[in-house]
Length: 119
Image (cartoon, rainbow, N blue to C red; front, side):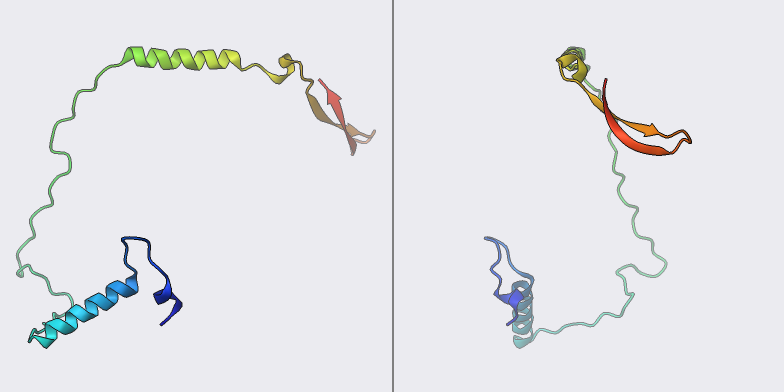
């Protein structure tokens, strides 16, 4: 037995190895009671030559259903969105100072260093 056979399946599921064993046992039992397996050549089909298969069934056969307008729900959502926008204020207005990184250049335009500047 391999490690795969020793793994415990989740409750109510079968491993591939267990399903394979069941299929092999069922096939062996079928052959023991006198059953025969017919070999079908590759490319064989149930359709007779020159006969066409029926067209596939269309997916959308019903007309589209009417939608129910819900303007009061949309208005409630928009009002909630606007109230959230008003409650969000920039960090600088909350009493926090924001700093940003500024590059200091020399006389020739080459960067010398970075400094933090309060806005």
